[in-house]
Image 1: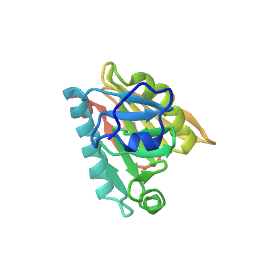
Image 2 (image 1 turned 90 degrees about the vertical axis):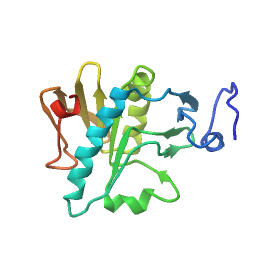
Image 3 (image 1 turned 45 degrees about the horizontal axis):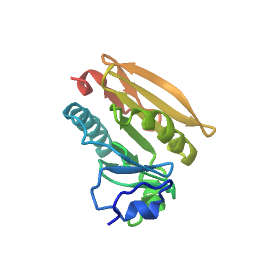
Image 4 (image 1 turned 120 degrees about the horizontal axis):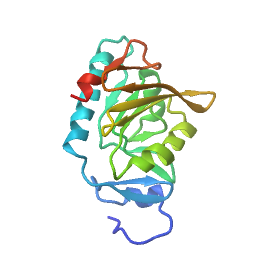
Length: 184
């Protein structure tokens, strides 16, 4: 087990030496510690999971919906634990080995005071770089969501939806998140 000490740069190898379940992510060679999510965060996450899981169950090529904590290895400098991920059935063999190495198809991140900067800037840039096709940012303070789609290697804001609206996936046509239910 790695004892967290002051170091200028950490690697995925250092990260792997942490105790299982340690509340860290590796973001641009920094070990970022987060407190446990708030109850509101977890309730919103549960709603997103239920909607996505129900939708995927009704599809022919179901894919995989995964809740945290699960490590996503992007490179030696970045190992993240997104709030919710979806990996298509077609890509599962490619990126799932003993763990997940590479970009999920869809990532949902729910902002909190301790992680908002990373989710909106650094992690978003890495998701874009490695090809996460759809990235949803949920803001539980102002009750809205932004859905970004990858087009020509760059994220474009596809939709910004408020509490009373529906957020519609491009990646999974027919998938719609009813935000009135999500933010209830």
